[in-house]
Image 1 (cartoon, rainbow, N blue to C red):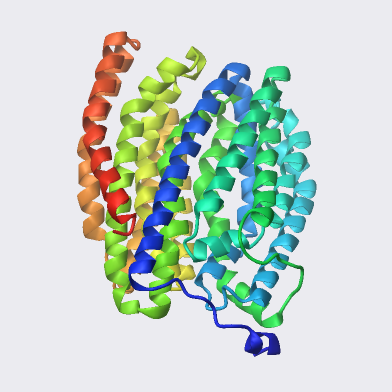
Image 2 (cartoon, rainbow, N blue to C red):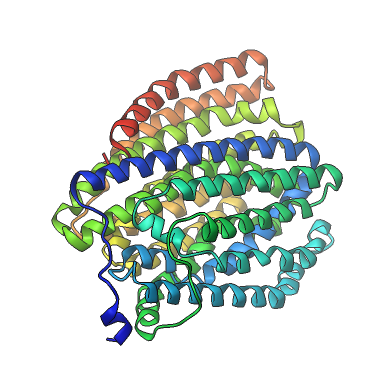
Length: 497
């Protein structure tokens, strides 16, 4: 062990007992409240931008986002989760090494973007897709996001480790508000995809500055400690594989549809996914920033309590997932018909159908952090590989025999295959989840069937005011009581209660 490691103070663990649960409760409230505000801002900005830009612009931005996300996920070595998980997660030498690795990764990502932008653009730009000709200019600029994120302070992950998320959430909301302002002003004066790229860079820049200037803790400096680097890379080796496969598992629909449908149809599909991804985003953030630190703490100090805390916290998360999924299925057709121009109305049937894949993803994302708390990153990689293979095959067969609707259903079946791997791996760790999954899936299926009948009648009526009002009323009747019950539970006990 290095001399620095021997001299470093013992890591400050998340407190046990009542103080731990109080921190979980506060963190979950901040996370849920912040996500609620962020999603309202995002939905409002999407409505405004859809009136300033054309469908093709959103389709081009879908491909830009896919490219930048792909670079990031193919090089992810799990710096954040390692800081949360490691016993050295408060050691200055360890944090500085993590920061330095993160900076190096960001610079390499930008260099890779410069090399790959032209080949990626050439893959999609052709006579049938003239809008993608802009990709070669947009991609290198959008990839500056990687550099900005590389310079994020590790104080972000320290806040997650210690479940002190208030300032972090505040910074994220400030960044999103600044991004929306830039996008709207830019799109109003120059309606091109550059407005969306500018907003993305603004958000990344504000988060980076906030992490250094507003979050508590010591400032990072550039240095590498051999022992810290070895632990980071050892922890992240399977995360590297897992997130690379995750990119294909999560983005295979965009990559395939970018070839098969027009930019406009892809743009409408992207607007539908903006609604569908809200429950996924909430589940991912809550499990990553609240539940994972809690489970990691129990795994370090009291493994016997891990199963009980996992089951309790997942019950709350599944109730939230059920509520949000039903809200998307019931309200999205009404939302798109009321607030969007007619050329975006097809998103009203795409969003509910896409919730099939989203539901299986939610089952997985509310459970797979327990594998990470156990240090089983290999199982995560296998799960993502199975999901990718299943979605690739299911999407291809679905599109061949039933067009875009079949493609969307095929993605759902592929996602289920990936979650099955998570179920098996958790059972091997003594954390079975199949009963929870069956119970909540049955409820979701019954409510989803009702929503399907309502959506079909809404389409047949051509979006008549009477059917819009009926669907909204049913949505309120179903989601209102569930939402009130969930709100009271989280307010009293937090997500882990």
